[in-house]
Image 1 (cartoon, helix red, strand yellow):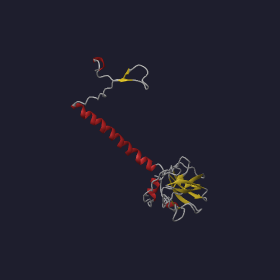
Image 2 (cartoon, one colour):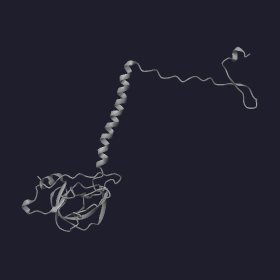
Image 3 (spheres, helix red, strand yellow):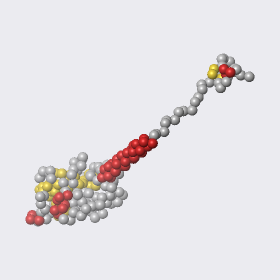
Image 4 (cartoon, helix red, strand yellow):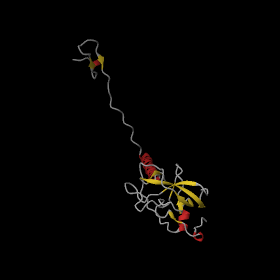
Length: 203
């Protein structure tokens, strides 16, 4: 019969029986945190909802930025969004939409930039006149022909709008980080030069 001092205590002896017996460490179940009081439940729920609302707000803000940041020439190529082009057949609306409006003659394409998931042709344009924007007359600027499609499609199914070396009225976007401007619209960003009295006004 075991002595009273050994009750409830197990002993451990090394293999082979040598050495003194060592008492095993007594273990106890981990203590659980106290349950919240009834008044604290609403506070906890508010904190959880606040975290969820913050996550949804972050997604709502960042999502459109990621979708839009690749439209400008020279933008990111890992993702893109096919554009739904606005109708800019009204010359005054096209002027109001464009960052710059010039009359100039494009040269043959000499480079490409990623734009809307395809390689857009870049042209040097000799500027004769400036109707709007921060462009110097008699200067040469680089303009990317905005593609009509995106992804794996043909960028210019109806031909490059800057493919002919003839004087055009160009409605241009703001320059990219590479200094390349684009056409505001693949169909209406480059049009024949109208008569002098029919030129749109920059207002």
